[in-house]
Length: 147
Image (cartoon, rainbow, N blue to C red; front, side):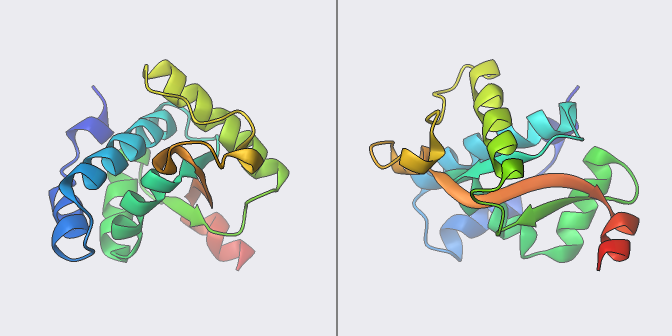
């Protein structure tokens, strides 16, 4: 059974509406996208995933809660692991790989796929447009070494 699907994200889902001003419809769409990506990360923890705009909106609530992010990450990915949010990856080879992984995750989930060419997504529904961000599982000790 998926640890992501069993995780209680209620406080982050509620905060999107109550604190950050999203409509319930936009919140639900954002969490649907993010859940697809997090489940794909759980199944493929060594792969990077690019975020849709909607998924990035949902992830920010979790990222802003450092302790909550670590608690979630260790619950799903194991002790010492953290889901790292990289806002500078857009246009890099790693983002290209992450976008392909995200498209595959949406396809596998039976959801509408984001566009093939993320650099030309102006006609795509806003929620499925690419954000400049990448998310991947990293080991805390590797982050410390790189710092």
